[in-house]
Image 1 (spheres, one colour):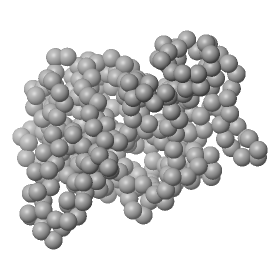
Image 2 (tube, rainbow, N blue to C red; image 1 turned 90 degrees about the vertical axis):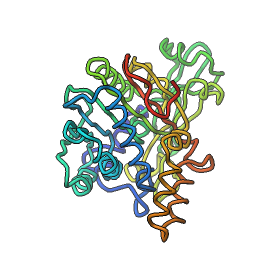
Image 3 (cartoon, one colour; image 1 turned 180 degrees about the horizontal axis):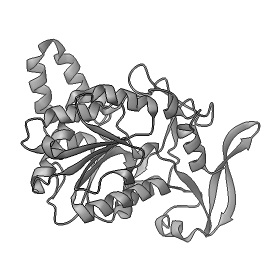
Length: 341
């Protein structure tokens, strides 16, 4: 079985899939995402989106879309922060791309004061100017792995090995499309691909070219230079109860993710790429430190927690450099805030 098929079944099987059965977020779940750490994250993302909207002439109506919106925390914080932006809420059509029934229920509760349309897939969103947020979305999409073997490649497949599930190498094949992307990898080096990720990125790019707007992608991942420096790496991982576990033990009971190939997404989108930049630099460039200081002054009893959350989101020892941010726009849109011109 291909690794992509295995991941898809583990995460999205109608009965046994991880995201179909439970709420995986927060301290009581299996992992914590940035919006759950501090309101600062969602507030700054909201203001970033609103600034893109202003810079592009305040189009109305427009589609405000979040893919993989978790509990709706990021969007709730973003909408609170943009409430005072004239015309922004009046012009938006809010769409959440979510397949988990459990998480949809949480989102409905969190965003009960807003008119929300839920979509199963990105290509179901309205054909309007697009403002998209994808935070820790692409890392959960299925991947395939290929190992460099002389002039060809061997796909790593999920199989029963010694009565347990594990990866084993498939037959040698030419795979010319991989030779172009992985020609700098040594013998035995790995390259990971995600057809579904690139398909969605292409759909995003098509809408940006046709209608304008901007897309913000935040995730842990790499570009071609980082991959080459590492010699190609196996990035699939599984998390359960806030601990890393074997991805092939207890299918459907742990969150499976892989690092995101930002260059592959940008290439598939075929629009203007901004970044990638470290999450810490991105948030600090948007004023995260100043927002944290204001929150600490307003709520002095929570000052220690606010400072700790800022450290976790921006410091190199925490999420600050592990997570990256990239924006996509179509010309002639101006460079988005906190990205180099």
